[in-house]
Structure formats: structure tokens, C-alpha cells
Length: 277
Image (cartoon, rainbow, N blue to C red; front, side):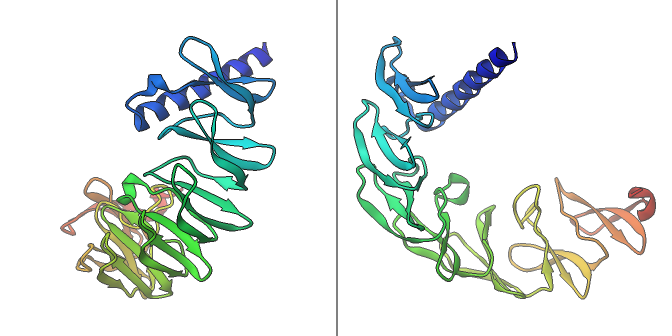
């Protein structure tokens, strides 16, 4: 019974991935073959259950833009929905088709190809990512000298020389070249506001610096908040870092916890020791 539950769980997981993938990335999802597994290898069937791609690949076949990433042995390539080879199996790593491109890596060098395997962005990066809709169609990459941001044409929006990985959220790019050497950019790479603070808090849970349109920043050990234009919204007078959510943040000052709105109005909640047993 354990084995049955595991196998059923695997098929349910694949079905969910395929369904969400197809609905998000393809208006004619019924035209794409459906993946199936046999003896730990993957192929695909048409909607009538006829095998159109034999089970010879080592990954689930999920089609987008007419192609799917596929793995044979230790090499990555791409196949079309009829099983034909669209991009040869000569890469070590690969990303699914996205914004008209696939990301590939070989011998530690990464770049982007079109659906026919033509090089669109040269393989000169150490790390690459998808061109994400939530990032305005931009991708974060890592080159020889640091992190940067590029568009689908390969143009540098932020030159890849950053000390840490940049963050893109709510229509801005937050980037750091070094300590107290940060900058807020717009999505075209224009400089908006310098970030010359001792610390700028990163919200690990949300995966971003900008929370509820405010940055949490510190000077001389005291925390406050600025907006995207660099205007101080809440003065740097609090003892612990925190983040705004839906208009409020819980902040600590002089051993007391306050619920603070974006106008700086404080509502005493209690003692800090009581709030954190």
C-alpha cells in the first residue's frame, strides 16, 4: 500500500504541474502531448492515449512554445511535440522555454537560445535565471565580476558587477556594489535613489527588500523606513528591524512594542520581553 500511495502521489504531482503549466503558458494545451512514465523514463501520449514520444527521457516532458526540455543520460536538449530534436543534447543544464528563449549552460558558461537553438545571448554568464513576468520581463544573471540584470535582447539593464544578487519588486531594482553603496533603479536601469545606509533589511520570507512600498533601513543601529524616492517616512529611532504589511508594522523602541502606521502613529502593544518569550 505504501508503494501504491507513492506512485499515485507522483502521478498526481505530475498532473498538477502539467495542468498549471499548460494553462499558464499555452492557449492550445490540448494540442500538446501528455507526459507518462515507464520504468523510470518519460515519454508522452496524445489525448487518445497513443504514444507519440517513446519513454526514453529522464525528466517529465512539459511543453511550452512548442518545445520541452529533455534529458538523456547527463545531457540536456529540447524536443518538439512530435519528438523531433529542436535543440541538440549538448548542454549540462537548461531552463524551460520562457519569453521566447531557453536558458542553457555548458562547461560552466550560461546563455540563452531561441526555440531553434540559435544563440541569442552569448554563453558568458556563471548563473542565469528566467525572464520573469513579475520582474518586468527581465532576468537576474551572474557574470565574471558579479551580479546584474539583462533584458531578452541581452542588453545590460544593470551591469553585472554587483557584490550581491539584486532584488526586483514593485517596479524597481535594488542593487548593491558594496557596503553603503546601494542604488534604486527603475526598470530601464535609470538611477532613482542612492541607498547610503548602514543596513538595509531583506525580507527573507517575502524574498525582497521593498515591503508595502517601503524599505527598512538603519543608521547607527536605529531602524526606520524610506520610500522608493528616498524620502524618510518613519525616522530611524527603532531598535529592531521589521517590515510593513498592509499599512502597519510592529516596531520595538526602548523595550516597548508599538503598532505603527505609515504616518508614524504609534499604538502601544506591550513590553518587548512579553512579546518574545
